[in-house]
Amino acid sequence: MLNRFLHSMARRRTSTVHLPVSVLLGVLVACPVAQPVLAHHSMAEFDRGHPIELTGTVKEWRWTNPHTWIIITVTDSNGVAIDWALESGSPSNLRDSGISRSTIKPGDVVVVKVLPRRDGARGGGLSAILMINGQPGPGAAPTGAPSQ
Image (cartoon, rainbow, N blue to C red; front, side):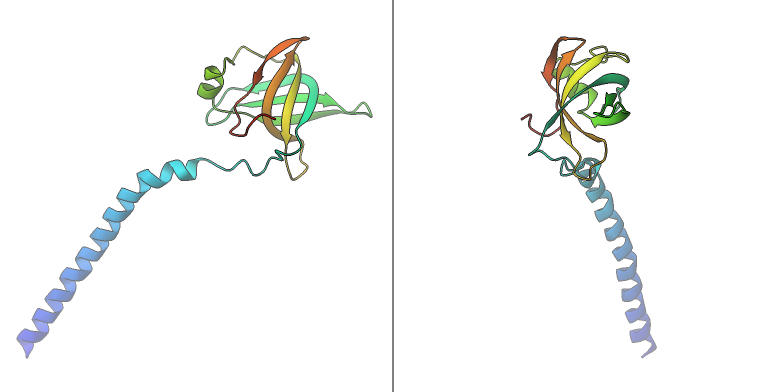
């Protein structure tokens, strides 16, 4: 009887030792696959159906990964200056579209096409750079959303 008990305990201990190792192995295999999926987000926060054009002065051009950002100051109909934060593609995607870190700089006056935020905040997805200081801009700016 004691032998049977010890044999039963040995089997349990072996199976419980293998369970954490198999779980750990599964997690280690799944992490690299899941990371790219978790690293990117949806464009659902932007209203693709109602793009707008904004004219403003570039305050800042953040050339960062995973997304670049342009902050422009727009003067509203009451003469109030309002900053808009516009998200765009990664630096490598922008370079592939002919847009570089030096395409725009603080102080430039730009006309941009924007997919506005659905929550009404002063921001959106940069869809295109139409004009820079009165000259034609490079056009489409990859945001992950189609230019309209």
